[in-house]
Length: 589
Image (cartoon, rainbow, N blue to C red):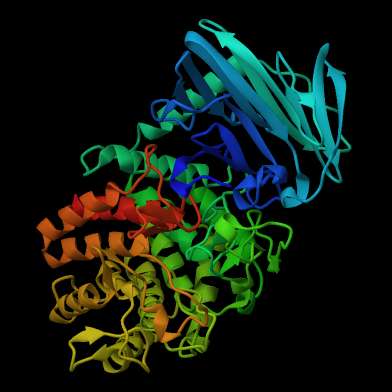
């Protein structure tokens, strides 16, 4: 059975990422890319679905502590056992085009009995590979091959074959160090020669530390903000510039229920919000990379714009279940792909236009192609903005006129107008101004409940939605406008659960799914920002402190938090949670 979600940590090489438990087991890894099939999938099944374990053989009486090395993505786990102390270091070296996961064990006190298991199962834990021993560079290695994939295990002591897995137990004593590595390669290619690990790992650490130096310092919870930014960087594909929403699929929002989604793709909205956070924190290179990714991904007819793409900008994300996996805590179905790719979400272009405006304001010059694309997308929106949509939360029920979606339509036209007025770009600015005013009037007429003094989730309901907090955050209304203050109060009364916000009331049936869910962390971070803009700074700081206390021991956050069970829920780590944390800290500053 997999560990609680909060007991995992993340290492990655900006091509893919691995989840490593406090027990020393790598329970999730997709190679060579975030959205590739997993070769270690115990997270969603059992150890028989693939994992890589290095840890004390007997965990009775063992205490465990973890930390990232400085401002890097190098993870160190310390096991203090009754007989000695074992330190496990995990890292995926960056920047050399290889997909290596390197694990080093070092005994610092006494003697520790170590358990080593290497269980490879390709295609999300379904396919047992053909495994054999070979020699590469004068060294014996273990090679697992199936279909297009090949994994190679190197180390000073290789585990033994044992009924479809490889395992071993051995003692390490004070001063002993052993390094193991797993390397992925296409099955038809030769096995790569060994490379020295120490130099590559040091170069990776130095690059992480240098990158972190640019982070703003005069900010609440500065260390957690820095870790959030480093996590967002890990979720950004170095070669393509695509930003994934999370490195996992099907970690449940409702334990034992059906709210299990694949987040290993690039949502335009999430990526744009990530970009806004990075720019606000002082990072500009990522903005250029993401803009270039956007241009490639959405190139073509604006009518064909999707809300999400694969890491390389691909458009095919068919959703299907994996019945051979039991699911995290029996939460079924386990899904890969995402059917929301075919939804209409009118808010997306507004987020994209905010991010691209922020890039302009940060001094990143538009190219002829980049502005032409934006202008084309805005003109297309002008023809279709009044249609109902699935909304921010990817409602799988009936299409609605969601108030948040309409606000983001206003944003798209507003930022297009500002591009002309403030940056001298060309476009039909009078038409855009007229549409902006028209959308504003409609929102205030149909999306606002004057009797209750609050905006509503959509035009045909009196229900609320935490996304309405964005009304002040995107500049549609001032944060201290009475309509905004009333909306904040109503959301507090209706959606607050033990001090944190739910997205909306699932029992109303608007999302078309069974079951419920837990407070959504991004919504509570939005409330921090809304408090700050409303002048409720004491409330903002208090909520920010409570939210930051939910991060696990290495500073990572999931999508939701089960307050009753005091545990994380949903995909992990979640870009949306980390980027809104950064935005909230900046709002408080």
